[in-house]
Each structure stands twice: as C-alpha cells, then as structure tokens.
Image 1 (cartoon, chains in turn orange, brown):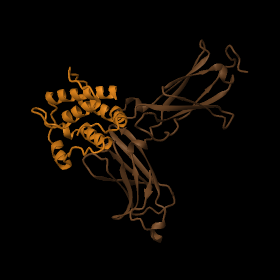
Image 2: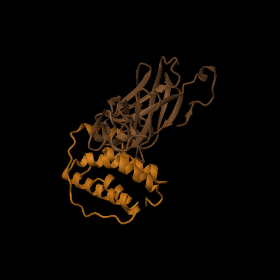
Image 3: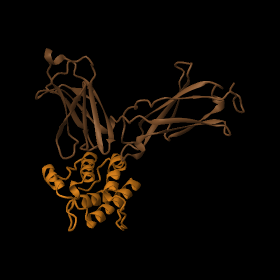
Length: 124
Length: 219
C-alpha cells in the first residue's frame, strides 16, 4: 500500500491527541538518538507501518501495544483501500499475560516511530 | 449520532421510545475511562433493559454496561479512541434500538475545582485562578473554560468570559464597590480531535469587592 490516498489531516489529529500520548507512555522518558528520516508524507506512513508492525529480531511484540492498534485503526480509517494489519485478539490476550519485557530493541524501534510521526506531523 | 431500530419494522411494543444519550469521561480513574448512558425519557420502564457497546474496542468485540439507579455505566481501559462504536439497548438478546457513536466526540470533561479570587490592591484587579484534573491527563489535555460571575443580588445578570488558561484578571473598575460577587467555571474539550459537552459548573466562590474603587471609577 502506498499511502497516497489518505486523509492526512485526520491522521495528524489522531496522532497528536491519541497516538503520541501512548507512544510517550511506552517510551517513558527513555530517549534514543535516531537518524531515521522520511521525506514525503506517504514515505513516512510506509515507514511507520513497517516499524510498527514488522517484527524484528529482539523486538517481536509491538503489534499488540495500544499505540499499534490505534495506528492500525487510524490508517484503516484514514486511507481508502488500506485494509490494515490483522492483529489476533485472543493471541494478544495470552501474550499480555506473560510478563512483558520492553527490550532495548523495542525501545529503539519506538524511538524511530516517534521520530517518523513527528516528521509526518510537521510536513502534513 | 443517528439512532435506528435494529430490525427496521416497528410494531406497538417497539413504538416505545428507547432513545438515549451518552457521554464519555476519559481517564476519569487513572487510565480507566467512563462511558455513561441514560434513556432520554426518565419515566421509561427500564426493567430488564441492558446496554451494550461494540466496535472500536481493544482486545474485545463488545462490552456490557452496568446499571446504577437507572443510569448505565462502563468503566474500562478498552476504548480504542479511534473510530465509531455501536451502542444498543437490549431486551434479552434483542436489540431494541442502536446508535452509532464515537467515544471521542461525546467527551464531557470533569468539572474544574478550587476556584479562588485574590484582590491585588496595587494592580487594582482581582486574580481569578482555578484547577482542572485535565492538566494531568494523557488525553483531552486542552480545554476551553467558561468563567461566569455575577453580583449576588442581581439574580440572572451573569457575565461570561472564555479562556484556555486557568488564570484570569478581573479589573476592579469593572465591578461594583463594596458588593458581594459569585463566580464559577466550567470546561469543554478544545482540540481538533476530542469534542463533546460542557462539564458541570465548579462549586461557586463568593467574594466582596473593596469599599472604594481604584483609578478610573466604574461609571
């Protein structure tokens, strides 16, 4: 999906009032230097989707976080033709019961997201 | 919000007016949100009537309301805060009426509190301050406040001022000298995303103006 046909204003409003506070709760003051850039608005959303939902070695679990579900709902609502990422509710309930470990890799990943969203918010 | 009967065709039993209204209060108890619904007709027989919300929820598809003295409540962390939900009035398993609602568009802030007035002789004014729990919240941090004040003896002669901060100056020369005043404040969401209703009024504060006015007597 190339995120060109989206209501960027609505996405920005939701990011500023809902997703941003949730990302801050997750990162909880841990600030990480990141040199990740996105130039155009669709490029930002493509990277936001990637870093939010694609599991990587050392951080397999962001998709179950509240900010990820809010991102999924925001992109699904805001971008016509975007069907969103399937997040299995029952699976997340089991995962949530395990003691959640916020790995450094996940914190690094979320720092990327904060930077990408910040750029998106500034250029949209 | 559009209301419609679930099954579309009405017979007499279903002609009863099950219309209802709701408002949400976010992070009202830590990170728990509160959704309150009530029938518009206070005299309706609500025995066996239940409310249920589906859609735009985290980890669950639907949630049932609790009933407390004719009002239906849900306290939960599971609001996604994005997208529409469907709220239905149910009689057993049958939906009598349903409404599409968006939790973030029916937000009723908590009432402001701790309103105080301090006379500043040197500045010939009154400094009005008040507090709001929304400053500490994650969501709905930005509110518009409406301050209302009146001379106590003039029943409905309220003066109103809107502000987004929690401090306001009333010029002494704008008030009657040696008079008792009442002042109160309420709030409404003031962001692009969260919308809703006025909060309840804060408790009032009463103060008396000094005998003589400062420079520029009130005409």
